[in-house]
Image 1 (tube, rainbow, N blue to C red):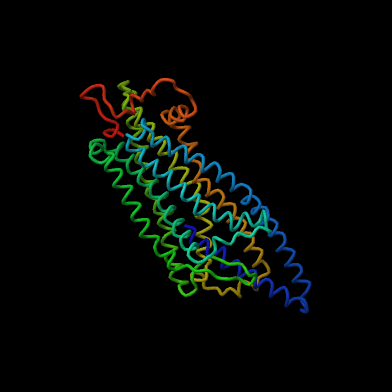
Image 2: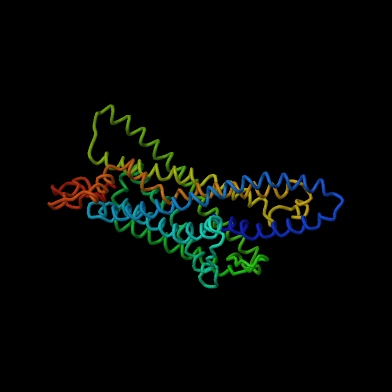
Length: 395
């Protein structure tokens, strides 16, 4: 989603700052000094909002990074543990934790170094990420990991939809081997789709002497189109699929709940399925909720980009609120971007709140056991009776 966003942040920020300096310099000997000064005053008001937004981004993002690294590492350990790895749903959640970790490393951390750390410590110059080769690799990995995170949520939603709404097909589709094939397919698709990004990227030096890892100017329009398609693929398309499937899942759960209350039948299998379904609903709703604000700002920037808007940039500059409007939306972008980052650190808390098995496994991490751990009877791969079901067959 942020491919076009990054273009707006870097290229457009440089463009507007340069035009602002030129316009302000030319206004010194102008007969319209009073109106220019009034305009600059308005600009300063909007700049204060941008300053507050940058402070929020600069100081809150490191908290997200620390919580995200710890939470995803713990989640990965739990879902790969002996008691949980036999469940097909754990494969999705372990893969999701891995992709979130990669996103935190190659996307959130790098973006914070470029936009947050330089604000907190302007004297500290870290230019190693804006060099030829490393620039392209970082962009490629960030695009691969974000695509993976989005579509793993979609795949997990599809798996839960089949398990809840088509129980007769569950044994054939919702298996450990089937889950691995699906996760592997998503990974292959993501590395292929993101190949265009490093090819169409380059290092440019701004007027301030800073190096910028951004779109190659020779492929400006092609990168804009492909970034827009990529943004739709990791936001709008997953939103629609997840929303539709969740509505169908909740509808079936409501119907099933009414039947069970009438029959007063509560089985162990139904409790397990319900728990993982609740985990899914929590993940998918947070995924949509945390993405929507950032996506809305991206859509606004997309519609006002030079390739979409027919109004020339200089026509915008004739209005006295041109730069202040730009500063306002830059501030909104910093805030929504920070909210968007929460998507990569919140899952651990969702698992802990909605998953009893997950909470028990985490507790065992910090509890000493002198005896061998007892496997969960409901999650163990071993069966006590020859006719009992394995976790893969109903999860």
